[in-house]
View 1 (cartoon, one colour):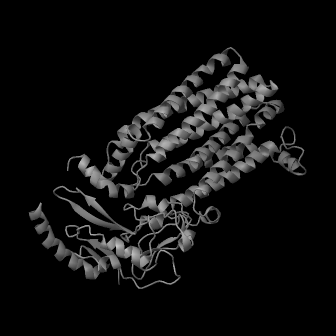
View 2 (tube, one colour; view 1 turned 30 degrees about the vertical axis):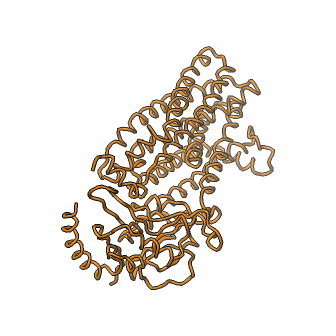
View 3 (cartoon, chains in turn brown, red; view 1 turned 120 degrees about the horizontal axis):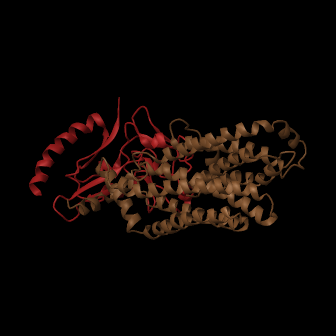
Length: 322
Length: 179
């Protein structure tokens, strides 16, 4: 849960920074946006810690998980994440070590090198974003196997891409908003970033609602009896079982409240009340993060692998009257 | 070529638990983990069936494909799916990939077994015990040898398939009469 949410959020945060990179018209604006570059890599590190901490042998896992690339989807996923993180680290370095506005411009030697290569930053950012989007696809594919019928549906990649873009953009917007609340400068830059964040969040929330509404229908049918048993058990857990409450809370917080805050964000932005807009952006990120974590808890918590259904197949046959 | 498999004549299984017990004893499988378990369908009702479920040593094992560290492999000479506990990182992905739920992840282990906390364990046709000794024993599935009703057949597929077919044909008719 921690791994998928944070690794996807890291991709979204990098995409938001690439957008900010194209928005920055001068050094002053670039200096304001530079703070957002600190989001992607630390968040990816939290994700990496997340994947390693639930292994029985975390250190060994770190060294060997990409041994079966091409065949094991888990190896493919870890390799794709590793490539993305390497690119994200280089992209972040090109922001934070920039000789004119980087937070670490006092660092010896490196800022001069970064300064000479600064024209490569945008292409590198675009490449990193594409690799990140590819990583999310591989990540979704790792769960979309016939033995996991509850995850082997279209909504799995939809949830993953929503987490990336909704979480990533709101995370960067929140960090920039906090910077604005402290320094009270670059109103225009923040306003442009918040407008973009608002549009992205709105689109992603519509996609999320569509995915959540599609999910019960997709879980209601299956090609085989075992897959049907697994999907029915998932539906039961989601709608009536132990995850019903958290699923409802996700709808209220992660969808309803997030949608309200996203729409409300337009009001202070229109009135150019940037303090209020910045405050809403920070709250929006917190709400989105809580909602996404709850959503992921439901997604994985209600996942019933086919191998777990077999011992319960008797209950399934009984439930359908055989 | 020898190809080891399990076949279950489920009409014969009476859920006595002998396969479960002998497996535990032979392979020293700790409490909370089972290399073979008996699944009962329609318990206490007409049409009740018991199925001993373990690793089926698939021809094309999905657990082998899923394992990110190549800890699982299918032995070429006899088709037995084995695992290397030293390579396993305990990610649990094979457990998701197996349609029979065969890979187990033991927890709360004590003594010598504690080293294998969270590390995958599954049926190896009695080739590797729960705590690996570093050597491979000759395949000899005790669950099949000790099955009191010969419901569980284990061994070379060329030997057990005729037995299975004969037993199945006789027992289906008897089972249908009973229900």
